[in-house]
Image (cartoon, rainbow, N blue to C red; front, side, top):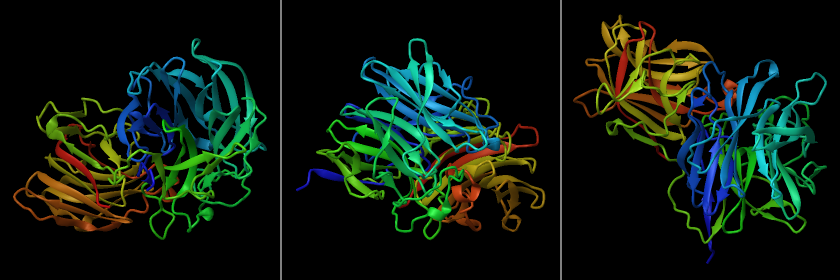
Length: 550
């Protein structure tokens, strides 16, 4: 009988891109990107590498993390998570992407440290602005190194650039010494990014992502006897991918590469790897992946996190235990570690009667603050005051969490008493400020009072399902959004009734995908309110749930 359980991918379904993994003892931690959502950088915890719980966030200080006005998909990119054995400190490095216009990119890289993974974290230490996906390596000689993609903007030079190495002094809290370019990639796929350095058996290993964050993605490994190179490429590169063949795209700025979709791959877009050595003396690569809607290339759930077990060969290269380079839907678990059969999709079950906001709920462009989100006014209910519309990139009264299953039900109950047509509150499916659906209570002059209706934002343009408006006899409603792969059906019910009634038609939601928007975030479910009248109206919410049905 085998001592190995099976881990099913993705280990973090839904919008959890750019994973960085860390093992400390028999505890394992994952950090993922949060882009324009606040708080910044999610930290997940696991004991078995298969099931992960959201444990905490890192950047909660609005004085530092200013996301207002940030274009999707800018914001907080590609966190790096490391542990310094000499000092016992945890380190996080992240890039704050401010602006992507003209492909010039304005970004800053910061580091923070803490004595515990749950914080409190130090004040951010500015590192550089040379590019993105910066990470730290703590060498066994006591030196610390930052490795970053240098984003090359010069005309005629290879895009996106090179991987650069810089020494970091934690005492001075800054980078010191020269900047050295150590790699221009281990393949010809182009779109080099996501560098991490590891040390094993006398070699420094440089793990990068190449091929773009879309369908040509791959995990690439190079090695050197010295940290500053020269680095040689693994002859099998990439070692994990969804497109297991060679192609040339150096200098091609397209990161999505729809033409490289592989219908035979069980997981798509596999790249952006991070390596972990377990307490059981085994090795795994955690990597970005995606699952398109069946028969399409549209990934409404966004980029997710998967894992592959790997092993070292006699000549010192990493290979997947499953063989080959094609990322697999399952992988072998750690020896002697039990993996439960619980589904990977977790959902959200937020009862606001507790007086607490579930920690899965995030807000775009800024933190949740008492001036727009509070329990004080009505005990047992969460009051959300209307501010700007969901098209805004500034003061948006919205709480949301990732959709982690193709078949999910998103639901809430709310009281709302609008007096003007520009006041709305309700349930939303939200990809970004240009793409969303809003089942809302509002004031209808046509129907002569409070009503229910659906509004749609698609590629920055507004539409309304005006033939499907319903008069609401009271100011209370329960709302549901039943997601079935590429469609959603909204429902409602009012006080004193048990049966759910349809609200509007089935709506195609494939427009809320990376491939249709040109972004790379993911579908969220949430609750919110807006008020363009006098910013005075508010809605009271009783609960919020995301229930996966797979």
